Amino acid sequence: MNKSRPDPANRRALLGLAMLALMNVQPATAQSSGAASNYPNRAIKLVVPYNPGGVADSLGRSLAEGIKKELGQPVIVDNRAGANTAVGAAAVAKSPADGYTILLVTPATLILNPLLMPQLSYKPEELTEIYNVATTPIALSVKTDGPVNDFNGLLNAIRKANGAAAFSSTGIGSSTHLAGELLQMETKTQMIHAPYNGSGPALTAVMAGEVLLSSDSMASAIAMYPGQRIKPIAVTSKKRAQALPNVPTLYELGLKSFDVSTWYGIVAPAKTPADVLAKLHGAIAKTVANDDFIKRFSAQGLEIQPTHTPADFKAFVQRERSLWQPVIKEKNIQVGN
Image (cartoon, rainbow, N blue to C red; front, side, top):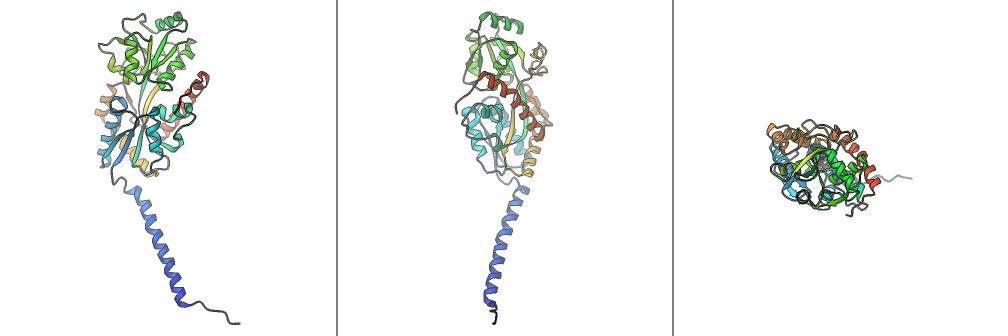
């Protein structure tokens, strides 16, 4: 029986289709690998999950200028406030992982929201750490002409109030709130938490005598000290703050496990190419190593991290999570989305 031989015309057609398919694959592969090597070739968006004004916004805008200078493309600041940074974080987590959308984060974004919110609009693993830019301790502030002059006086006043003393924070589930809860745990005292919408109202509450104590980031509180009606009596970092060298730390006052700060970092969507992340990290590192940048934000109570690696940032986040998780569990703290 004779075997049928392939029709030459059909063979040519099949070969042509195979070559066309190969041609369609090759340009796409070149384009995907070239996207990182040519990065960036258009504007980058930096999402700041806070309203304009304030420390986070100021820091974000200065970082945007520095990244623009280093990478040669515009960096547009997009303020997306809401839900304790969750609104901005969700927007970035769902963005293309191409390096053109990045996010300014705080402890709320990567640690507190996932621990506090049962139904969160993003997952922390959808974001990848690039650079922990700056830290600032939390400052404990009291009314200048009030009954408290130092930390021991604060503890005496809290105990004398027998549970009726109140402390203000920037909101339920914030790092300033949790610092106040940790303070009670470490000193075996009890206070009422008075959450306010931001630093301004929380600090004003101390001035007005509505609360005994304010727990707020030093970077927010420091502008209120000169000539104001509040004063710092302690900071929560292990070492004294450069901007408040005369204010003792809780560590030196006897709370040896107390080393707490709030911080600001930059992240990107989790699947962003490694070489794109490296370019962003390099641009941020050069920006924050600038003397003018360091002086500007050091004066505002921020301690800049000029040599921070992504691995440093990831390890830092893990340590922070191990600090706050038992506090949240013991105090049974939850917030809605």
